[in-house]
Image 1 (cartoon, rainbow, N blue to C red):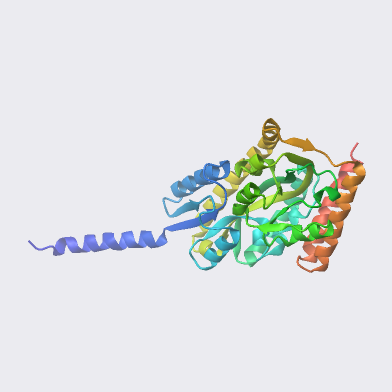
Image 2 (cartoon, rainbow, N blue to C red):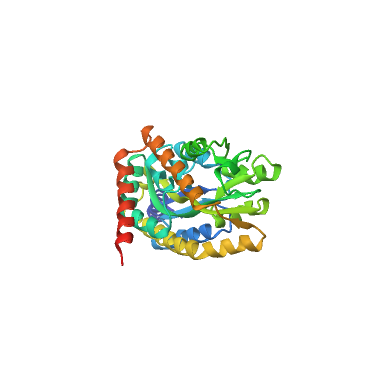
Length: 339
C-alpha cells in the first residue's frame, strides 16, 4: 500500500508544529526571593494567565532562592543568553542604568504618600531610561522601607562605632553615606547575609521588616532602630532583545499580567508591613528610637551630605535627580499649605 496520499498531510502537520514551536517563547527569570514567598506566588499566577491568554505562545519559568546566583551573576547570565531576566534590587541594575536606584537615596522619603507622589511622576521616565540601556522593566514594585536591625541598640551615629555593618556589594550609594558617618561596612551579596549573621561576620543589617523575616535575619538580631533609613524597590526586568521577539500583542499581555500582579503585591506588602513589625516584636525584638530630635536631624544632615557627594560624582543624571527632588519638595509644600 502506498503512503503517498498521506505524505502531504503528515509533512504539513510537522511544519505547522515546528512553526508553532519556533513562535513559542519561555522567558527564564531568576530571583533571590525564596520559593513559597508571596512574590513568587503572585508571579506564577501571572505566568499561568500569560500562558492561557497567549495560547501557550509565552511562558514564564522562574528560578527562585538564588539558585542562579546573586544579582551580578544573573545579569552576566542574561548577557550570555542563559537567562532572559530577573527580579533585581534597583542597586543591582544601577551598574547598567544608575538612575534606577534614585528612589533609594538615604532618608529621602518620610512615608508612602511621598513615595506615591514622586513615583507617579517618575516611574515612566526611569522605565524609558532602563529600556535604552537594554532592559524592559515589567514592574517597579515596593520593597518597603529599610530599617537598621542590630545586635545592640543604635540610637546615635556614635553607636555605629565598632558595629559590623552589612553593605550590599557594589552599593555605592550606601557606601558613601556610611563613609560620611564614619562606618566601615562589610560588603556581601544578599545570599551570604544569614551565614554572616550566624558567624558574627556582621551584626548589623538594613532591611524592611518583611524582608528580614523572609530571609530569617530577624532570628539573629535583637533591636530595630525605628527610623526609615531608605525606600527600596524591586525591578522585574527582562532583556529587551528577548522581549522584542514576542509579538506586540503578546508583549502587551505580559506587561498587563505582570503589572496587575505587582499591584496586588504592593497592596499586600503595605498592608502586611505593620503585621511584620508586630511579628518582630512578638519575637522579642526591641524597637528603639533615635536618642533625640537633634540626632534625627543629624542623620538627615549626613544624608544630605551623601546626596551632595553622589551628585558631584556625576553618577546620576543631574536633570533626573533634580526633577525627583523638585517633585518631592512640591508635595511637601502642598502638605504644609493644606488646612
